[in-house]
Amino acid sequence: MSVALVTGASRGIGRVIAENLAAAGYDVAICYSGNEEAALETIELCKKYGVQSIAIKADVSNADDVAEMFAQVKTSLGTVDVLVNNAGITKDGLLIRMSEEDFDKVIDINLKGTYLCTKAAVKDMMRAKKGRIINITSIVGVQGNAGQANYAASKAGIIGFTKSVAREYGSKGITVNAVAPGFIQTAMTDGLPDAVKENYLKQIPLGRFGTPEDIANTVAFLASEKASYITGQVIEVTGGM
Ligand code: NAP
Image (cartoon, rainbow, N blue to C red; front, side):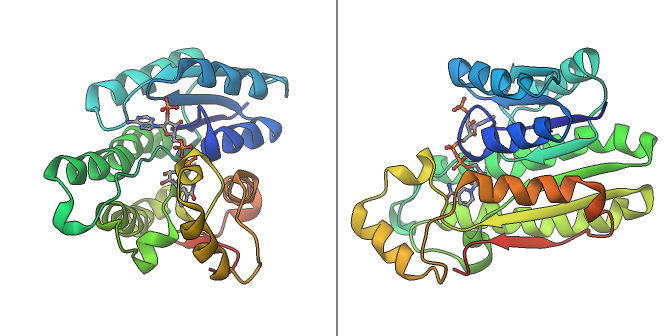
């Protein structure tokens, strides 16, 4: 049985990624930052597929938490074969009003969290001579977005990180790719004003917002044997946005 770890999988896109990997037969570990009830719901959804699933409270931007999380996954399920760096936050605002604290927080969780978890996973993957790392970036990291300079910088950073790590570990049988969602209906986007949502919708040729399933299907493909010759890529899942 192979093991997948999905960060930030108590809800939203991460939850559905975890479910899809469970459906594909992976034992699934998930992490969350505070929402234990939602995390326990996710692992129950995964267990319906007859696999093992555990939830771990960990802040991906904290090196000690990440080390402890990987140790727990190893003890309970085994070494991680598929890592999905999905945990992410926004703290939007125009640059002139963006506090240093809000800038640092977004970079720490989105970008440094991806670095810490990838570094922890790569060691065992090198020993196993196989592994899949899938980083959730954003179309905003490709195109930029007014009011999201911190978020866009973190997500653009993830793209550079993905391409570099793919080059470093390709010879060890490890693939590293990024998925760049467009506008996906989750708690992260639910709070936006209707006028903002309508404006985004006008920019989507396929005429609908994305769902967590749209992203989870792409992640499941990248984790599968069918994607074994793809590395260092950014797959945009945006409805053409
Ligand atoms: P969401 O619904 O807000 O869920 C965020 C998840 O991240 C939750 O499970 C949360 O845990 C966890 N999390 C937050 N801070 C964390 C930390 N420090 N350590 C560990 N886990 C943490 O977000 P989403 O919309 O599903 O987004 C998932 C990913 O997709 C993010 O990287 C986001 O940037 C990216 N994305 C989303 C969209 C979109 O339109 N929604 C578009 C492009 C990219 P708790 O439940 O415990 O708080």
